[in-house]
Image (cartoon, rainbow, N blue to C red):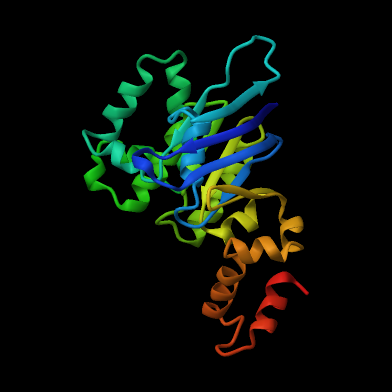
Length: 262
């Protein structure tokens, strides 16, 4: 099992920006995928890039530990918010061949790629000889999720993986990630709270550069303060209103009671 610990982590943004990321203490044992929720600008992408080593912290420590008997740091793969931009040159087959050429067991990588694409409703042979410009946004997004999974990192960090996906695509992704997370660490960053709530057991909430919550969905549902601060009550009310669960003009107290399950 892989364990993540954070100690006095701080990141100061360049250019004198007053906004900064501060996480004094946090720990997560990857028995299941971890969801990280936050509104736009909360700092969750910065946190993901710090965890992956893309950014260096201004201060503090990030420690990754595993039960591997060999003292080898875990392989961490971060997939950015718009990874499909990486696959616009040449055909997908050419890019996959280039990536796996220097990897041991490259045949297994292609087998896994086909498997994960099938799980997301795509046939590799039907898209392999097309360039990224010839694929839809949804097809590119699914390919950009399946490929890093096929590379079998110890920890996979996906930033906003459901962008451009419909309900069936999100359900398929949830199932795939649940299976993948049984043997790998998985971190999912999303502002799609409903998707995280339905498929992810444990959650961190980042708000204004701080870790506002860490725990289960049941624990979050009992914490109205965090729900209000992080905009979750407003989000839930809006989603219910759009789907007919809350009528326009319903009193605010009633809306809050519904969202909290009271």
